[in-house]
Amino acid sequence: QITLKESGPTLVKPTQTLTLTCTFSGFSLSTSGEGVGWIRQPPGKALEWLALIYWDNNERYSPSLKSRLTITKDTSQNQVVLTMTNMDPVDTATYFCAHRPGSGWYFDYWGQGTLVTVSS
Amino acid sequence: QSVLTQPPSVSAAPGQKVTISCSGSSSNIGNNYVSWYQQLPGTAPKFLIYENYKRPSGIPDRFSGSKSGTSATLSITGLQTGDEADYYCGTWDSSLSAGVFGTGTKVTVL
Image (cartoon, rainbow over all chains, first blue to last red):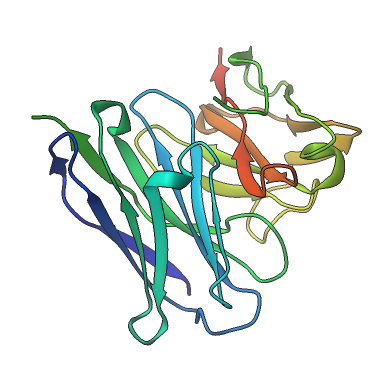
């Protein structure tokens, strides 16, 4: 059974750096093809794809946010970390991490999400 | 700014059918598989359809997907009140080298 859970601050100030951790179980990011992604959703708005890290450490980023994002993994801890620099109130959103199976591009299991508010 | 366009809302009476379109381009839907997600109010998205039309185990056959050219469609037959949710399409964009989601469609059961 695959589970994922996001953790991190609920409130950050403008210009600060956000660090979110996704802790997962039920699969290994050392297995060929596996990946974990981050997606966010501002209140009342659509899903936005942010970043993805593969089992082989390849990373993919949303072009519009690439300069602010870094995704890393700790295979031994079953964790994926997303950092986003220079936070702004428009970055207020629920942030989800999700599992990408080795067989294709889609997210089959999602975390519950964590709401991050950017405010001074 | 989603690159996949969906209608903001669709509605139908219980037992009826709704279809949700997802329009993209050759760099995304035209050359990659499409997936669909259901998001009930206040919850995380739920995986509904993958590789254009395949259903994960546990997803009823009332939900079906299709793709033609640069557009994809999700159909829900035998509409139930529990189907009221937001629905999103998703795919890979080869030009962006990134995933993309649709603008989202709210399904209302009248």
